[in-house]
View (cartoon, rainbow, N blue to C red):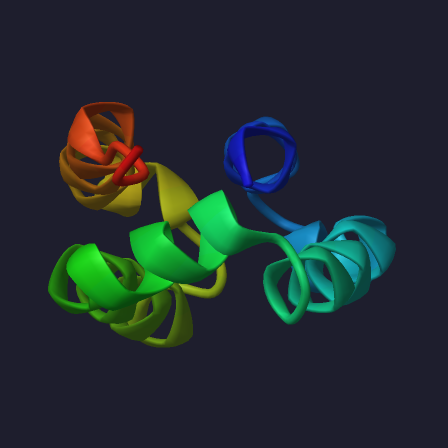
Amino acid sequence: MEQYGQCVAANPSSWQQDCHQLKVDMAKCSSSHPIIQKIRNDCAEPFSAFEQCLKENQTSVMNCAEHVQRFLQCADQVKLAT
């Protein structure tokens, strides 16, 4: 997920093409990995806000840096119950 965010930030004009495989890989991982599932559940709101920002700023994704930061902060706080 972090690689996808970094890819998007590094490719502001071509992220949709350049980061597509990372998005696909992230989706595959999230369907099976418990911590990713928990992050997607617990951090659904900041992730949705990030995705919406990307849709609205396709040619200027740097406008979404704050959204990425909020999502990553949320994800860093998620813990699996032991």
